[in-house]
Image 1: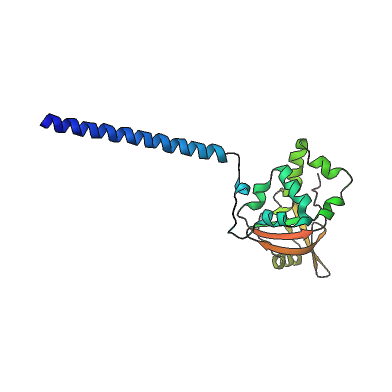
Image 2: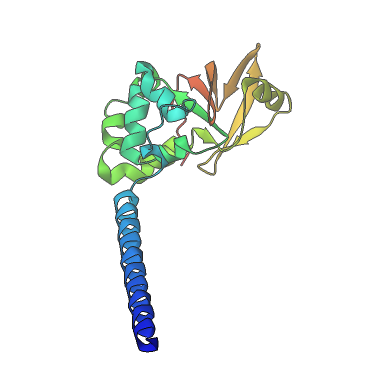
Length: 191
């Protein structure tokens, strides 16, 4: 009788260990699959129809930013403009890109110019919260804004209008991860 009980206990113990190992293998396999499928996707690839729109979502919804959106995608910096923030983005309109010398945009979106394009685009992003009210204060103090490119842009108040990097802010939109200030010039860093 004791040997029978011992045999049953051993059987259940082996069954339990076997099931546990299979469960761990299955969990590991599932984890690996999830990791592999999302390994090359960043926050910009997340589909969220419930939260407030971030800067990239808003830009994609406005036709006047189609060149900016295409440039962001070509440079591979989508994640930079959807991050939690706060961010302040000085967003050039299509007309701003049209002011550049002929062929400039076409040349910049080529794969071999990806780093240059990314540098230009992050020169439009301040990793801080700058609503228009704050920009007015910064202009009054004669301050420069630190940009994600590592460069600085001067904030000025000219006749009640706010200028950043020499270009006027035309409109301001609050987004979930900060602010978009609409501008009509591309802020190309001097270099």
